[in-house]
Length: 76
Image 1: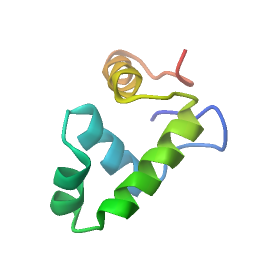
Image 2: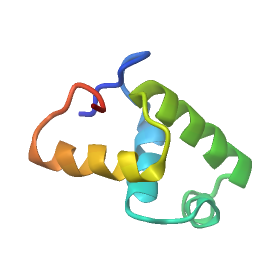
Image 3: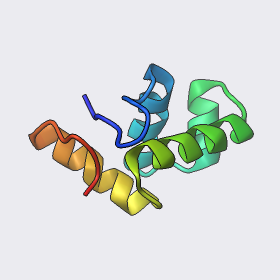
Image 4: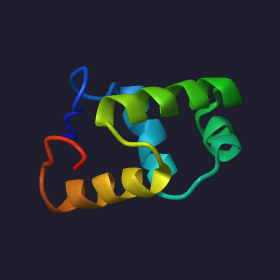
């Protein structure tokens, strides 16, 4: 489980969006795969970044790679 810095853990939907974003999918691709709107994906991304205290997809990918190795409390 990835524990967020600000506001608990990611929701199940945020985790889905974050997994796909960390894997390199574009916002439109994530929206199509999850059958949600582009704007909903963008809103989830803002929430994910805020909760994890990060600002870009590169950091998101790093957080998720580390989560596979250990259970991080939050992004460094």
